[in-house]
Length: 191
Length: 202
Image 1 (cartoon, rainbow over the protein chains, first blue to last red):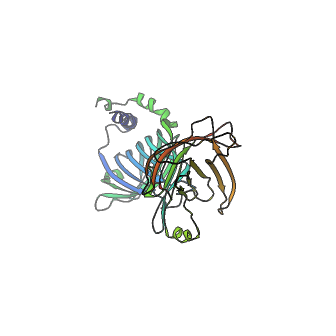
Image 2 (image 1 turned 90 degrees about the vertical axis):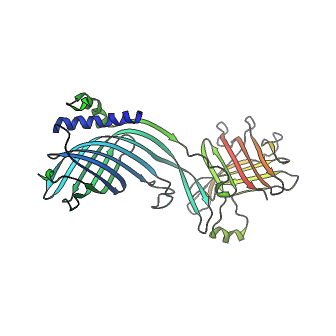
Image 3 (image 1 turned 180 degrees about the vertical axis):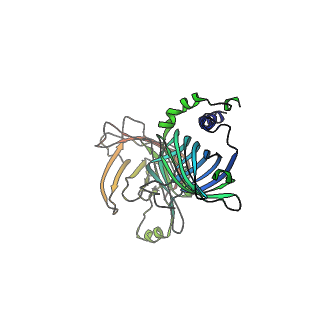
């Protein structure tokens, strides 16, 4: 119940903003997903260029230095951040493509690694290790922002996109570059 | 959803500061938990030193198999000449990457006789305590560059509790807690807590 209330609080400002600038909620919808240095699911409403985007993104990454910092080494040694965000923005046609930008408010739940603590050893032909770090567990509100470009609509009615996302917050600012797919973006929005 | 029927600017006012600045909701610093012993069914000794976890466990791989012919390189081991004192040794030297501080702990159980509680304190103020804790810093090439020994503090509890002992297999496990101090931290002892071990005695 608390989570539902919190989500409502997060979404209401963006919804109110959309109401203010576009009138009734947009009737053109799309859903999609993105993958890059993170995974993302999104739903978007669009009308006359105005955008309202809800997104959920999960990102995990290793420590910058120390044990487990080598790519694919000890996959459990990871920083993590889950973001639930609501954004409002605007899109412009670029030929048959669309470019857009949006910003809003987001809820974050994550853990940020601190200092290395210990290693557990496992037997095997080459042996293996699992590294453990101290970490900070956090929840925060932040400022999500997103810019991207969407390809012309394909036969299936979808668009491929290249998306750059960020979340600015007091705990851990995160940047993501994602290849995304948007299904159901209306051609009317091309104007 | 009457709320959506017209603009609600007060929601923007409420959300404004958090949008511009963000804010923390909760934030907790967490130390990783100690693994259950034994780790990977190998000889294991774990504890916390001033709340920071220390883990030592043996493991086998091809490289260790080769160098084992050079001598006993086990980082966790115990020896007990029947009827004498049991000496338990645990070091995370194999667990720590090069360049990181390593921790070695020796616990001597006087007149070991199986399940029970053993004091780690010296029997007299003048006797040299056999139990000690050692911190060693290694260079990136693996050679020790500094070490500091600490010994059980007499004014604090220092004991090992043997919770299970099988005389035929010599499998032993138990718990321990003690305070140790050396010349560099006489006024600020290191608290070794939540200690536990599981291994087979030589």
